[in-house]
Amino acid sequence: MAHRPLRGSEREPLPGARPVGNADPQERVQVSILLKRQSSAVLVGHIARLERGDRQARPMSREDFARQFGARPEHLAAIRTFAAAHGLAVEHEHAARRTVVLSGTVAQCNAAFGVDLQQFEGPTGSYRGRVGAVQLPEELHEIVDAVLGLDNRAQARPHLRRRLARTTDAAAGAGAFAPPQLAALYHFPAQSGQGQTIAIVELGGGFRAPDLAAYFAKIGVPQPSVRAVAVDGAANEPTGDPNGPDGEVALDIEVAGAIAPAAKIAVYFAPNTDAGFLDAVTSAVHDTINRPSVVSISWGESESGWTQQAMMALDQAFQEAAVLGVTICVSSGDSGSSDGVNDSAGHVDFPASSSYALACGGTSLHASAGRITSETVWNDGAQAGASGGGISTVFALPPWQSGLQLTDASGKVLPLTKRGVPDVSGDADPNTGYLVRVDGADTVIGGTSAVAPLWAALIARINSGRQSPVGLIQPLLYQAPGACNDITKGNNGKYAAAAGWDACTGLGSPNGTAIAAALGPQAAS
Image 1 (cartoon, rainbow, N blue to C red):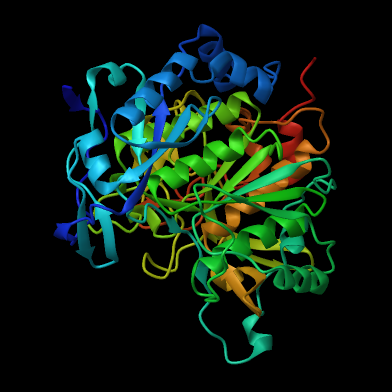
Image 2 (image 1 turned 60 degrees about the horizontal axis):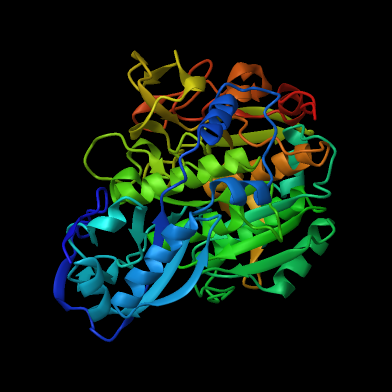
C-alpha cells in the first residue's frame, strides 16, 4: 500500500539531542488521529460573526455541534479499517472531537505510519522520537489532519516562576497577594462564579485534598468543588516536589478557586506530549458532563518547538471553543521576547499565539490601602522571568488587531503585520506574586501561569451573571481598550510598553467591571 508524507507532520530532534538506538520494538505507543472537519459554510460563517464581535452570535450547544460538525461516520470507519490492517487497537473514538486514539507496539507503528522511531538523549533527558514526516496511505490523506503521539518528547513547559527564598516566613509573604486581594484591586464584579465550570489543563503533577482544604480555610474562602479528569491514561499524581509540576497545579486551582469559589473546577490531566495537550483541550471543550465555559492553560512552548500539524490542530480546537461559547485563557510565557530561544530573535509562545486564545502577559503590581499604586511590565530579566510577547511567525493578523502598531525597545514604532501577543495581562512578578499552598508548604509563586487562571476566574464571574457565556471576547475587548488598565512603562527585552496595545502587556491588566460592561448585554434569544 503506497504511502506519502502527511503535510505539516515533520519533526526534528530537540536541540542538542542525538539518537542512541532504535526504540524498543515491543514498547506500547498511543497515537491520536485527528480527522478533518466536515466542510460547512454554517460553521465558517459562525466563526466569522464571532471574529467581527457580533453581539447577536449565540453559542452553539455541544450536542448540536457534534451532530453538525463532528467526524463523519465513514471517516471513523476508515480509521478502524486502517488500524485493523496494521494490528493496532482502537482505544476510543470521539466524533465531536474528531479524534480516534489507537495503540500498538513501536514495530507496528513504524510499519503503519512509515516512521523509524528512535530513542534520543539530550540536555533535557531522553525521549522516543522520529525525524521527518508521518506517512499515510493515499486514501487517508483526504480525511486526516494530524497524527500525534508517536514522538513522546515533553511538548510544553509550565509558565510559573518562584520568588527567591526569603529569610523568614513573614518576609516570604511580604508584598505578595492572596488572589481575592487581586480581584478587589482589579475591580472584579461581585459574582462568585455560580453555575460555571472552569477547566484547567495540566500536563503533569497533581494536587492533594488536604492542601486545598488548608489553603482555602487560611484565606477565608469557601472551598470550591475540584474534580480531576483523566485524559490518555494520565491522572492526578502529585510528585511531592513543590518545585515540580505540583506547583503549577496548585497555583492554577487556588487562583481560580479563590476568585470564583462557587464555580466548579475540572482539572484535565494529560501526558506532556503533543497528543496529550490536544486531547486535554478537546476533552475539556467538548465535555458534555462538566460543560466548562472557560479553559485556563498555563503551559506552552515557543512556536519553533511545535510541528505545524499540532499547532493547526490546537488552533482548530480553540475555534471550536469559540463557537461553543468557551473562552480560552493562555499564559504568554515567562522568558520575555525571546521565549527562551537563544538565537537573538523575537519568539512567541504557543498556544498563546493562536488568535482564538486570550493570551495573558505579566505585570509587576504594587498596591497600598486597597488601590494600585503602580503597575509596569514584569521583567526580572529573561533568565529570572519576564512577560512573554511579540509577533507570531505562524498566525495571520486577526481582524481585531488590524491597524495596531508595536514599539520596540529603542522606541521605534512598527506596524503589526501578524498575530500580536499578548492580548491582556495581570500581576505575574513573583516578587509581587500569589500566596499559594503546595505539597504541604505555603509559598509565593508568580509567572504568567498565574494570569491565565486569574482571567479565567474573571470570565467565570462575568458568565455567572449571564444566561449564556461570553466566549470569544477578544474582538469586543479591542473595541473597548479603556476597559483595561493601560500599562505604559517597562519592556520585555525586544519590545517596550506604550499607550494602547503593546507586545509586553497587550491591552493591559483587567478592570473587571469595565470589562463586563464592554462585553455588553446578554445576546437576544
